[in-house]
Image (cartoon, one colour):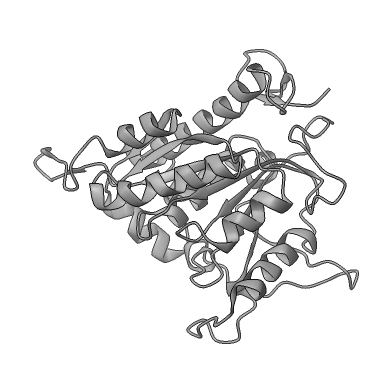
Amino acid sequence: MSDHAANAPSSSAPKSRTVSPDDPVPGVAHVVLVMSGKGGVGKSTTATNLALALSRSGYRTGLLDADIYGPSIPTMLGVTGRPVSTDGKTIEPLERFGLKMMSIGFLLEDPKAAVIWRGPMLTGALQQFLKDVAWGELDFLVLDLPPGTGDVALSLSQRLGVSGAVMVTTPQPVATDDVYKAVSMCRKVNIPILGIVENMSWFVDSAGVKHELFGKGGGQAVADFSEAPLLAQIPIDQSVREWGDKGTPVVQAAPDGEVGKAFMKLAEEVVTAVNAKADAGGDAGPVIDRSGGGGGRRRLPVSK
């Protein structure tokens, strides 16, 4: 699928999430948070490949790097340009592979410089990346959140109608123990959990032997605790690191490989989870078919 086809204008559809009068992204149908209570579990890899998978599936998609202290999206997508403003009021997001994106990394003079900000400055920057970026009409805006349960997640829950969160973990208890805390925070601030991604689930060596290096069952345990589905188990594969370092995520570089297929399937599961929320009578509203007619391939909820 070409970039143009992947981002062709969708059928006119009302917003499907709850949009308040002061919502910063009223043109976005669904806002999906990729988060975890733990660092180093692969949130940025998951967010980037999920966003690209949604785009390749025909949805108009944006990706916001909400990890102000440790932005990874510029490297993972191989983008070094600087955003510009055509109207003097809003910033145009950068684009690659048909994906709109924004990151603090695009604004730093020195990519190796540290961002040393207190909480209010961080949340203010995030608010600007939502409100002052010309995202336009999108089906999905994926946010790559920083680890933990601090200012960013709390601010988003207060200022933005969120469709749901995808929680990322690795199998071992040192990760899941922190992810449980993130699940609990989501419950307290009313962020729906769409499901769980277990990353680095196993490794298959050259002889074809499967090794569960970080144990097993952690993702399912978090899913059971959160009462949400286990959306995907992503294996360890050297190509994920290699392609990410080259600025072409594995979904774009090798969509037919094992990991590429796993992320494409994850995108389908995320759409299904959003639809299930709508079918259950949540605030997402009824569901329409956006597959272009026939086959019932893809559906997107819209409000009445």
